[in-house]
Image 1 (cartoon, rainbow, N blue to C red):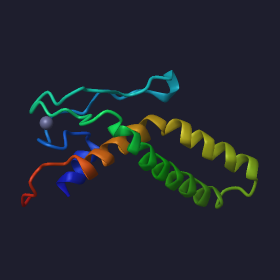
Image 2 (image 1 turned 120 degrees about the vertical axis):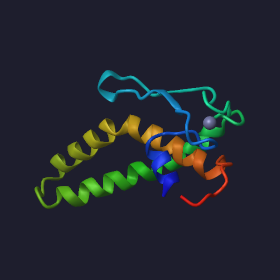
Image 3 (image 1 turned 45 degrees about the vertical axis):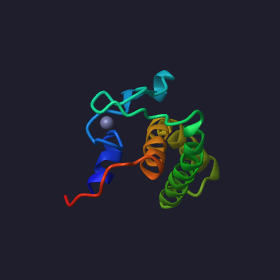
Image 4 (image 1 turned 135 degrees about the vertical axis):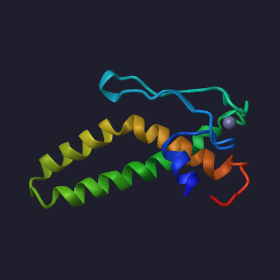
Length: 121
Ligand SMILES: [Zn+2]
């Protein structure tokens, strides 16, 4: 459960203390999140090899599709107009784009680069 919290709060997968992102980004200002090169607490290099985060695109795809399906299911209760639904889905995908970017990279790192020992609590 603590790893789940560290993913949401964007902490280093090795020490669980350093922040992974220097800037969170803002889709309304067209600003992408900016990652730290390495952990400020333990010195762990986040991009362990060139192109490591290409794989996070697949995670991002899965997360985005899940959100789109969720919006579609919820929107069905309020409208049957397909144009409104498509606009809602597009708006959601746009507004959550930087969140998805950060979440997918965090999930990818915790799947393949989490060297933290499992400890109770
Ligand atoms: Zn660290």
